[in-house]
Image (cartoon, rainbow, N blue to C red; front, side, top):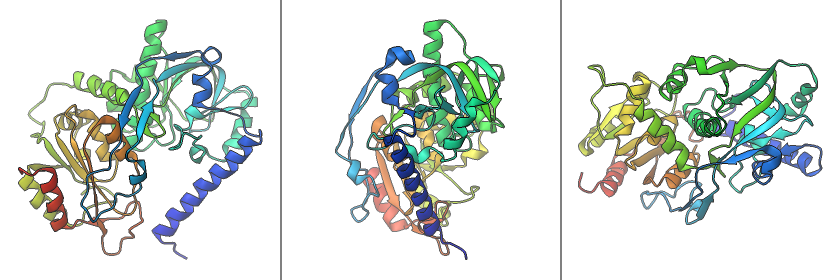
Length: 400
């Protein structure tokens, strides 16, 4: 029997909610020991916490949309006052990194949630991202394992293969590491995923971290006498602007000179997924015929070098594309670009939350599923209603 994409998505949600229910119950019953972000922040002596940066406050609003399109999921998040605490970096003693996910387990088999995922939307522990097999694997810390005196891990389950999460959960931690190195005068070895993709290596290089600064690790166990753990730079999934400003400034500063192969750069960028596996716009040619009258030029980010990708988005004033990692490139622009996010019924709040905390205008535009595609499918292709898009573009750019 072949399940529909909607059913598969529902099963995934059930699995995640079931995981949250099971682990949450074990935690409340005292059968699962965890150390939360709050535990570390509120016990700076126990965990040797070093705070840096500044808290951040902002007010959320509804995204820009057409009157007939109700913003998915985000309307309940609008009109909130959000306060993000200052980031920190902690020193953890005698811990283990376990499994390919690099989850941090203490000497009493407690799991450090800051190695799993930032807290949930309501501030609760994000057990949805903690695999159930960790209940068994945390017990393997009793076994002998290779040792390191000191290390900082950039390993994260979602950052292994996904461009957006590589920046959100992995690279954003480097600012905290550098703060620790600055106050201690000690250079810390960095652990990364095995078999880094080219854009992961190139982004590390452009940030000033060549291969000599990091080493790959692929499990199953590693004992670290002193683990340097910068906090996640998202709180309740709201992004901390300082982290992305730091990344942007460092990347732009280190950009090599443009060459004759550097593409012409338009301040209005359309992200094409023509070479992607899914979430393609079936009538992209029609979309571009309209979008070009508003100054948009189509680019395929995968066809660019990472340096040129940064260069392109660093001067962007408007970015339009299908819901996906390509929109993460907005963090490279200091110009508060207008973001236009095409989505189907599969939608996450990530880019709404990111644009809200960064102060970028955000518009979302619902697209119908393409013939044969399931509207709830994560990788389903879509069709853009050109007349509706024309109305939205006129609303955003009335002078053309």
